[in-house]
Length: 354
Image 1 (cartoon, rainbow, N blue to C red):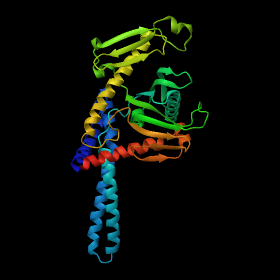
Image 2 (image 1 turned 45 degrees about the vertical axis):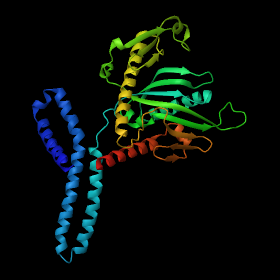
Image 3 (image 1 turned 180 degrees about the vertical axis):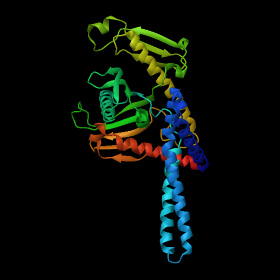
Image 4 (image 1 turned 180 degrees about the horizontal axis):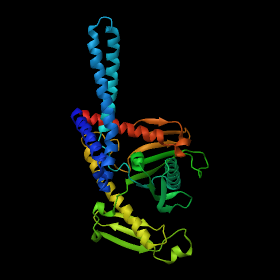
């Protein structure tokens, strides 16, 4: 670790010198690249210098042990210095952990009703509102991509695009099965029912071409949209269904009146789904050698239970239970997402020590 930190410290000095010269600004792309690199490694090198100073303080205190009058003071300084070094070393390890290249990406969020019929569809709508409120708290944008409303409210399936820095980093652990326990509005005898929904969080690909979609592998069908939208939406074949033949992935989009816009949006969702499959394959390989917080990537895997009678939310992967369900359903997810991120970080640190 120290050798790598020395290299980064030297690189920061090199960048400082390069950015001081006028030639650095002659090529703006190169200049932006260097300033971005400087911003990334600057805090890490700053922490490393603090780590070196803490080691220096220990060395200085050690020399004072030879003085009988300073021995007790020196011992206290050494103990405090060692504690500080251990703390800084852990912080450095965290900063050196490999970063998920998708963390800053926008996402496509898919929620599908599962077991539980109408109640499951209603809960799908509740989850959509929860994530939408969380997005608002983070000042992200939410765009409806596709929706299939149920008869009594809620959705059989809904897809939204969430646009904002860090959207994937904060929501990537939401993929999986979400179970709800509550008394449905249609229940006349007050019995608690258990229903389930599945959530998929997929990073948006930069370009459709990033996932190498061969046009020959696509079957594109157009049809008349159904549902709300007035007379025009039902008079033209504006809805688009794209089937990716090699994987069998099917994407439908009918929210816009323009067939061209629906096709473009459907291709974006398709690219995200294919990218998601690739990510889950990679994660399953990693999980074969060590436990993975994200799990197998199986969307049917139950990750969380929302118990309304008890006002309780339990995340089964990290054994976290919070008795603040009303706040959570209103988008207050920070405590939960931070706990999941911290556990994932701890797993990565443990893996480095293996």
